[in-house]
Amino acid sequence: MAKRSMIVVFVHGWSVTNTNTYGGLPARLRNEAVARKLDVQVKHVFLGRYISFHDEVRLPDVSRAFRTAVADELQALLTGGKRFVCITHSTGGPVIRDWWHRYYDGVKGSGACPMSHLIMLAPANYGSALAQLGKGRISRLKSWFGGVEPGQGVLDWLELGSSEAWDLNSAWIDNGDNRIAANGLFPFVLTGQTIDRKFYDNLNSYTGESGSDGVVRVAAANLHGRLIELEQEEPRRKPGNKSTLEAPQLKVARVATGPETVLRIIRGASHSGSRKGIMRSVNIKASHAKGRDVVGAIFECLGVSNRAEYRQLAETHVQEAAAIQADEMLETEDRLLLSDTHFVHDRCSMVIFRVRDDHNYPVTDFDLLLTGGKDNDPNKLPKGFFMDRQRNRVSSNTVTYFFNYDIMAGAPEVKKDDEVIRAATQGAEALGIKILPRPSNGFVHYLKCEIQASKDLLNEVLRPNCTTMIDIQLRRVVRKNVFRMTRMAGDSTTGSFKKTRPGDDFVS
Image (cartoon, helix red, strand yellow):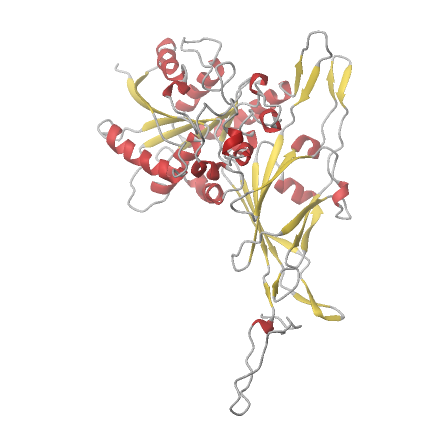
C-alpha cells in the first residue's frame, strides 16, 4: 500500500537570517518516519524564509506575504483536498496564527484552510518580556539573536500587552473552541522551561527567568487563555457631599475561557541554541537522544485526526506537564570548589491588565494594586508571589504582571538531600484589585474603584502555565460645565468663561 505523502512547512522565529536555524529537525522527521515504519511519507518539506529585521516590516505584513507564498509554492500540491502541516518556532507561531485568523477564521468566502495542523515550538503567543529591552540591547542576546539588527515593527507586536496580540488572543478565546476540528485546525504548543546557562546574560535577568525557556514564558506560549471583563458601577453622589462622586465597585461582567489546547512541556529544552534549543539541538539521526522528546511529540500531534483524539492528547499532557514540572522544580548548578547554586522553578501565571473607559478611551495614568485577605489589604499577599511587571510602551494603558503561581497557591517544602532549599509556603487566601486612576478631578476625570479580594477571583485569575487578560472598564465622568448655554442679554455677545470651574453637576 502506498504511503500517504505529507507536506510540511517550517516557519522560523524573529530575526533569523539563515534557514540553518531549523537544525536537524526537518531531516529528522523524514528519517524518523522511515524508522518508525509509519504509513506517512514526509515528502515535501518547505523551509520558510521571512524578513523580520527591517523596521518597516510588521507582523501582519509577514502573514500577508505567507499567504502569497502558499499560493505560489504549494498550490500545485494542494489538490484533492490535501492540506499542509506547519511547524513553527518562536515568533513563527504568532505569524501563522495571524495568517489563519486574518484569512480563514470565519472569513466569509475563504473556503477551507489549507493548513490542518499547526505545531508551534516555543511560540511567543502572548509576547515575550525580552521585547521591551529595545533593539540595541536585545541584539546582544545570543539566546534570541543572530547578529543583525531586530526590526521594530515585529518587536512591537511581541512586546507584552500589545494591542495586536490582545486582539488575536481574545478572538481565539471567544471562538477557538469552534475551530478545533478535522475540517478546521488542530493547534499544538511544545515548549521547554529550561535555562541554558551558557546563554545567560548577567545584565538581563529575563534570560534566566523562572517559568520560561530563557526567552518565552510557558504561560505566554500556552494558547489556553482566559478573558475577564470588569466594569465599574455607575457614579453617584457621595452621601453628605453634594460635589463629590463615587463609584467604588468593580464588578465581573464576563468571563470567557479559551478551549483546552495541547500544551506539551519538553524536558530540558531551552528556547535556542545547538545544545538545548527545542529545535536547533535536534539530531538528524532517527531515535537519537537529542531531539527524541520533541520529535516524538510532533509525531503524536501529526497522529491527531479528530476532536476526540485532540482532547485526549490535551488531557494527557496536562498530567504529564505536572510530572515534568515537579521533576524540574529544583535545578542545582555544581560549582567546583564552591557551594552549589540552587534554582527553584515554580509554575507561573501571567496576567495582562488593560484599562479603558466606557467610551473606549485608553486610561494611561493609573495605579493598580493587588490585595489579599478579608480586609482587602495589599500587604496580605504571600512573600515572593510577584515576579515582574511591564507596562506596554505603545499601549500604555496595558500592564502585564508575572506571578509565581505555586507561591500564591501554597507550595510544599523544597529539599536537596537533607538541606531545606525553601520552606513550605501557605499561599494566598484571596485576591482583589484596586484601581486609582488619574485625573481624579477636573472637567473630565475618573473615580477610584476596587473588586473585593476573594477566593473565587483568585481562582478565576490565576491558573498555572496560563495567561489571563483582564479588561477593566472605568466610568468617564464629564462635568456639565464642559458645555453650557447662556441666554443672550440684549445685543451683547461678550462674557468671558475663562475661569469657569468644573462645578458639581455631571453629564448623565
